[in-house]
Image 1 (spheres, rainbow, N blue to C red):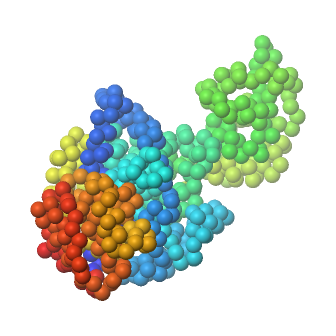
Image 2 (image 1 turned 135 degrees about the horizontal axis):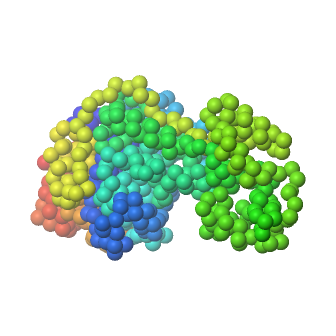
Image 3 (image 1 turned 90 degrees about the vertical axis):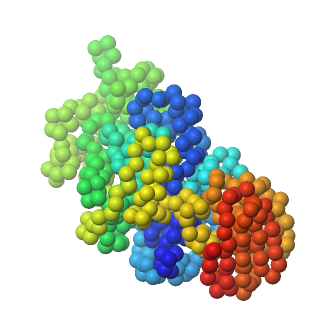
Length: 573
């Protein structure tokens, strides 16, 4: 590998958000690593999914949402994977992207997004303000094994992961557990978030642990407002798919243009809605200041009764019934008779008359004429009706800032897997694609398959980008660190010939002897950068040699020898 390739392949091991931004192939590589993992395949044997055999993929997806919400926490602790500095990372990636382009598009290097993010102060929003301005978190994206292992970390009682980890987890699980074809799943990354668009029914977005249908997207609740934040305010930096990727900064794109057109059209349909009474009620739900200008009218034994809109919204809160949908009458039945009056309330628009206006006029808010017609209807009652209309248009019509299509589309070998294949058949199929598809080859590094991968990227990552293990041993001598490692649980979080990185060992207090030896090598390298190290694995024994020798026991069947010279050069035999 040349230095640039070695950097990319070592990034497939650590998978920081920054590394994925610079090397966009890595996002889908992690999806494939999760697809190969036995963990998600075991979910199919859970009773909750066994009961859904023969049911639709949509039903299974809704159950998957509940499963992930029950079993996983959202984690954005800045120190989980340690800290680095802007200067270190900018220098590292300078051969690939100029620092000013990184700063314009990445949240950790100066990007603050559109108006929303300027208002909230992005460093304070993420808790970065407690550090000097140059210090940033690694924010590594976890494999499903690392997510699952949070159960062993102090302060956690379930699995966990940040948004990119959850997006790749959802994509793999939707394919394996729900049988949704990979071609219908698009991963969408912005500078501050990662989510998926699933091309099913009216479209479904994943958002951290949740799923958001189009109906939910436009329901006007606080949860839907938070779900909208990224696509409403941010430039999409990367879209990736089994056919390839497109990146906002790179001239070349490997995604199938037809697949990208499909996403663009379907996502825009998902993010836009016609003006109906249901959507207007949702708008009022999130814009409470306008509720005072509306009233609800109901028939009571042939006589009209009237109710302030804000009172009905108050009843809706905590009720299973909603305003302006099929449960409207049931919600009205919950309202106390004392809250209704027999006279039309002054200076309020009757919602039944507003609904009739919408049905008759069908104002198209995409046109100036439609917006003006709605404004005229509201103006007799609503002060500054123009502002309400502008906010309503913004509510029902979001235009995503996707990477431009003025790219050089480079044809690449598509990744073809079928939900009907077994795990073993999928791994075999992916092995056959490694020579023709870089993303697939990188997937085996993200999967940590040390039996079929070059060890140099793993070793480079282990001794350069594992600050948590250094912090955990900071107060120890090397001898004390060795004793501490010998006392940790000997179980690896990865099965077979796959290896954890030093920070995974430190965070989860467990590791096979090979993994512990790499952690100790990281510590020795930091204490004495001029020391040459040799790590040899053979017949169940790991020997780490420098000025003295340290021995560990391994149940991994790996064999090999690694030499790390004082300049950081790595030789593997």
